[in-house]
Length: 637
Image 1 (cartoon, rainbow, N blue to C red):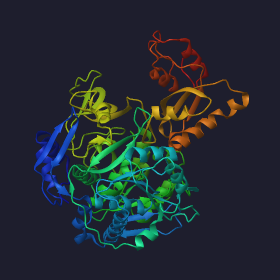
Image 2 (cartoon, one colour):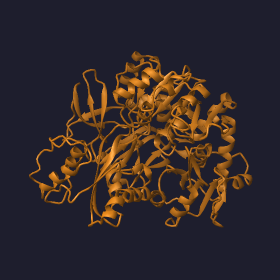
Image 3 (cartoon, rainbow, N blue to C red):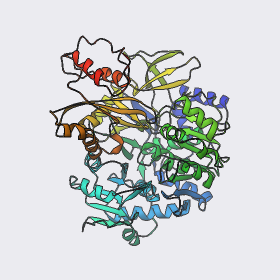
Image 4 (tube, rainbow, N blue to C red):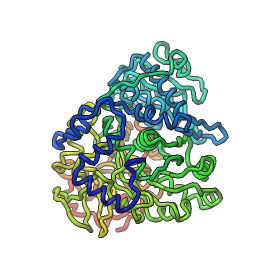
């Protein structure tokens, strides 16, 4: 494979080249792809607007770079291995040839339903091969896919459909998650009551449950594919046309649709995949994420398939039928590179070592982590027990907005250090700034992490609201993309990500906006006001701590209120956003202007009430003492 770094000296050389001449660096990599028309200009950009345009006026289709570019060599090679929820069920293996046929066929289904270039298609499916097929079919015809994680509630799904103005949704009768069956069609039906733009729903039969099908709107997937052929010419797209929208929580209650464009994302996804994980031809790759998150977009589907890899898709959960499931799958398919979240690792550490030691993991060459910084204890367990001390761990830092990995070791090349993301990839120029935006140069510094030059995979806009994109990412520090994360650079120049510095909580590697959770809690009829913060959680990394002011409650209502609040949040957003701690309070620490001092609530939630800073500016300083006295953790005073 070209463009693959093979040594530390080559990394240092490529990094210098990428900083000295970014356009030349990425142009050389772009030459490897199939273009209908080459670009007129490599890059035009302005972070003030923001406006970023890579490979200007280039014409291409990303699926041609997956299929036509790979088919000559890989028609009969396995593209996707699907491991079902129940290990007793049959595995599905699709070759590149078979996947191409299914993608083309479903692209024709979409066309028959009137879907054309630029239309938004919402996908709400479990982790089945049809999820990958549907998203690639969208890309084939130039439709924009908006995948919603199939754990979100009807309300959260409706919000994302309405914002993206989709007119078609792809779902299934249901899905499996461990011992549970999730009624996806029922959730979709409830969501669509609020979504007048949706004209058609294509439903895949997964669980076989009886589901109502609305005449004129709902179509079975198996019926729809019978009516079309398996050849579909790719739509020629512009480099900067939108490939997909993916919704992520922000610091306001409304989720924002992060928009990624075709050419830059394509090049960045493949380049990062093969370099970070040192993927070699013939390897079996497994990223355990759900495709409903960006990790699945970039490192289950696009990155691996562009690189001609064999990628594993997993429908199940790591602890069912027992806590050895991950390692059974590694053994079964002889997985070479394994990429998962620190949350999953911490949960498995708690289950004991025998689930790992009893399995043959000798095929593993590289281990990776994603979603949040990995703590040293989990890193050492992963390295010593799972990797037997011989597999490098790549602790990757990136975001939905960055499109792909930004700061990370290269497997087997960069010397690693537990809990450090280490060094930026070529083409990535991180800076650490103080609160005023002054760059902190040199080593042994700590501050806010920004990126000072565009990279091909970066966010282009937030769907339907470009001003929000400017405000959130580009307004805080002039001429820089602000990540929202704090970071430190140690004496060796290695980066360690310190966590969010804004009103976003990283729960099990998924970003959840505090405002979105507060909005949901406040829907409960007995709740007057709430404030939500993150606090350290042994398994999830960060948990959600909610301080809630209620109307006067009877004893029965007090006994049930926590359960009811959690149910309200599950209904509004989904189980992923349920508060771990709920504390009923009589008031919240507010300034005289009415601003809630979340800094104080965070400290109390962390169990550290000795370091609250100045509370004299509060409207009622006595509120703080009351909260401390009722805190749900052991508070150090």
